[in-house]
Length: 187
Length: 370
Image (cartoon, rainbow over all chains, first blue to last red; front, side, top):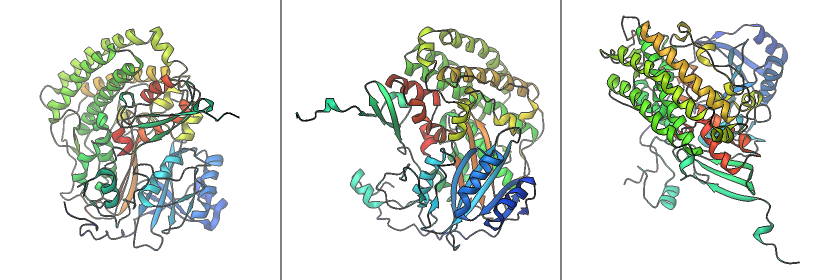
């Protein structure tokens, strides 16, 4: 049973070189541009899928606008991606869908710094509840105003957020494992 | 004033699970009860968390493929299909027609096995002991086809990025057609046991109602939203793997209760049967692998690809940084999102209904916890 405290020699992967995106132009993009102006800094398409990059503080008003005015009433998924070398290290990604006749998907991305709080989307999409808890659990991103901001998959008193890039693949909360499982290591 | 006793408390908190036969695995539900009435519940999950998304970042695209089978292990073929489609989209390749047709055959067979397992255990939970013996008999026949095709019954790893690893075995077509022929009378048999059974109807009708609007609000997908009355199925709305070539209907219900979800899933099995027959009869010849680079290293980019798994919308959000390891793989598990509706469905119902409602959501904890 090795005393693994640190990740086993895994350098965090390089941040990706930019995606080869093309600008996304459509009626929807134009109406969003008109409504939010500079607060949306990018409208892009990659592999035939549209996404936009916005400022965190306007995320909720964008989701609300999309839901009420544009019928994007279905929050399919909410997740995050970690780029530790970037100044704002996290991408928080909302995958939205609008039902037929539109039958269209759209991703809303916001860039978040470590420790920065993100307003909760549970007011607009109640289904965001567990999804935000999972993002908090895995990345340590706190959603402000969430009705029940606690871990969901890991034990509540676990230390660390496993999907951060610096968290090693065999790293674990040694203290928790010792106290609760009465073994040195779960490996 | 006499001291308050526990009898004065109006709300009783009762713990159900994680070791409970009707929670289908290690699900813990904390129920708030007023007598037998459920005022609300909270799910405690994560007992089966294995960190699949973290493992993905430390394996190559090819190495990670078998891991996805371990999420929804009852419908491993669907998991594999979703992952392959997502990576193929990042690579900009498409599986050849023969591979697509075989994929459809196996995925639909898998939908039937998943629904059969659901039906047997759901009925067993409610007290109907007979169906589980019948459903496992038919499930066995379908699993034998998987076994003959790729050597595994549950965690099949049947597909590869770009197509299929194996050519079909000699009697796949006849085996599938024999299964299809035998299966329709079997569904009739299950329906005879349950559909008009007074106890079954009494235990499921009006139990755990979810309306279409509630489904949309909570992100609920699959048979649950269809039973509420919205005939929305990704195989029709956003066809993948050549589903547009086959003729099939999307069954839907009206009331969004446990009984309608039962009817919808029964119809879905019949439709899957139709699809398998069409796919087998029109199985094209040709290569089974697209031209895939020796080392899979997609250009930097990201995509979200989703399929209609037996449980609902199963999505993969894959981010590539132009290396051989995926930068991030996010799985959008239908069971996880659907389970969130448990609280809404249980409120106001009786404690015995909770068992019926957990069964009707059709969760697999391997997928909820990942």
